[in-house]
Image 1 (cartoon, rainbow, N blue to C red):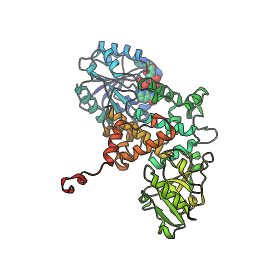
Image 2 (image 1 turned 180 degrees about the vertical axis):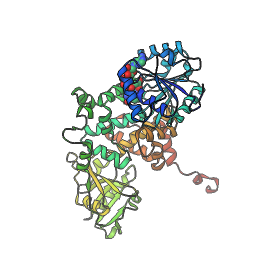
Image 3 (image 1 turned 45 degrees about the horizontal axis):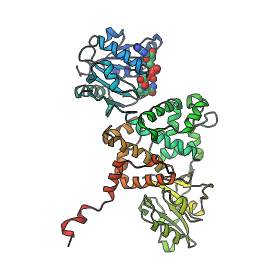
Image 4 (image 1 turned 90 degrees about the horizontal axis):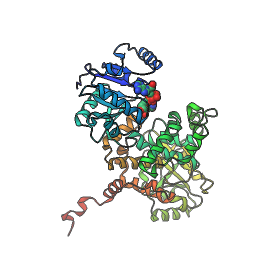
Length: 506
Ligand SMILES: NC(=O)c1ccc[n+]([C@@H]2O[C@H](COP(=O)([O-])OP(=O)(O)OC[C@H]3O[C@@H](n4cnc5c(N)ncnc54)[C@H](O)[C@@H]3O)[C@@H](O)[C@H]2O)c1
């Protein structure tokens, strides 16, 4: 097995969407590329794509037997069907050299089973490229139970030489990115059925979570039928928590499978996602109105540019709660709301659904260096309207804002914390390391921050508190914090070591 850049000889079998892209990736990296494809039309397409990118050499079409003569690596990208792939691997094993590394671009099949079909499982590995391979920088390297360290080292080197980033995971359903994002996609769909508009969900994901594209727009782009199929596999392999959300099945049955069909979560004949977001986004003109900010997390407003005043002389107070609102918070809010001052509670905690006094506004502000974005609760069903105090607050900080339903976690925390919980689950199960999980989310999903980076900034105990609030509010075990997160949360809130040091004990 040789790992030199120009020495590498790669065979790509199957020139569909993925195989053509993978062949181009290696051709651009100066490897010797041979391709095997049954359909002439796909070979022609590859030639056109190579020409368009300025590459004419390095790719030859051959029979499987010819192509494998002195190949280092074969990557199969044929249809996602176990029997077809097993039959192909049996043929490869008849022609390949003893040191040939065999990779599958499968998105859901077992590398262990493919390894058995090949006969030398130590040389079989998953290489999960993302679509389109030429543009997406991430490759998930999937380690079967018998894949050798030598095989892993070789493919990791080749992937890096081809200009891609490799992350490693075990042979497990949906690997890293698709596994972590599944509960996040489900949450976006549940929010939709609970009264949030698709544009609101996608806007919050962009503005509060730093995602380049929102979850519903992403699903519409990749096709709801594909998402439903892989969700059914996840449910079968991983259990009831991964059951698809009924709305997606209804849409698929109606033929509303996403952007290509003209309708999915969005109806493209009526409104494009961007227009939907623009319609829902509101801008308050900053008036630098005097404002008192009180409560355990009042520092959230640091740097928002309002003119702070003492609560005694304020005519507008914002009470900012921690991750989990306590009985003391409720008492404080009740006593403040008894006076003629306008009062707004800033929290995503679900208890305000029941404990918010009449006339008090409910918001959750997200403050970053350049802007303030506020989720504003406006829910006739829950009898939580937007108050004059809320408007005054939005103007005082010059916020961009959006209406959201009165539900635990509102939109941002709900999407983010379900994703973080799943990321921790993956590490707990030994599927991948924290650093690979974060890299996979950033490169595979364009997230601006990894789940573990978020966890480090926010604190595990705050994430646990928020998930517990959702679990209580919805009565659904999908929000149950995973054991590893509970342990991280406990260590978060335990007193610092120095408080218990011998010198402090008299
Ligand atoms: N499409 C995606 O977004 C995506 C992303 C990641 C992984 N994958 C995985 O990549 C693989 C390929 O997916 P795709 O979307 O490119 O499929 P595709 O249906 O577009 O292409 C499959 C190609 O394989 C060819 N083929 C089938 N059997 C063959 C054989 N025995 N010898 C030579 N050629 C053969 C077909 O003619 C076809 O051109 C699947 O395992 C899929 O799960 C797909």
